[in-house]
Image (tube, rainbow, N blue to C red):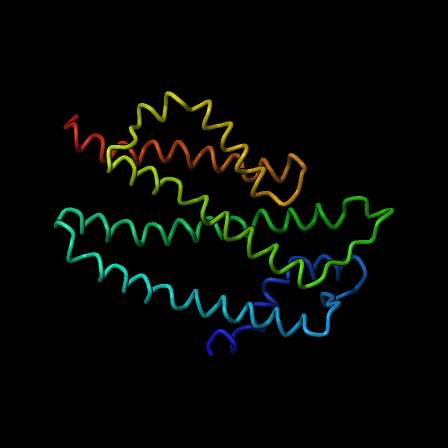
Length: 216
């Protein structure tokens, strides 16, 4: 119900990068829909997404409450550290996608071959595009936490990560190409460089449990 009440506001906010670009080019202030049920289905999808997002803290609390009795005291400490860290890292990735990558990608896609092709996107195409890009960037920013977790389980060491840094740079490029909605090198680089920075930050985080275990 809360998601349904906030749906129009959130949808307007999501459409802003594209609509603002259209208004500058031709005075258009709305996005198109080509199906009779498209506006309703998009609105319901946004409302359900908001509802799930608002319910996530409660769902997370229930999951933590289920697993805590089976953990040792030192393991419980890591749980309370990892959960808020995962949330903050996801927000950082989503914010990066929204404020930097999406405006750049929309500008490039809308202006590409604009002299011979007129681009008019529909809500059915644009909204999933924004949601998926924001989600996958948020997930990509979880890399340091995954490295920390694997190092805690002794499945990964910072020395091994530093030794394979060249392979990691190539893999970051592959992931950036998969996440980026365009094929131009500018938008890919906007994702690639932060992923490389996150990798070396992951090495730093992985060294924390490694050093605690070895006593170095």
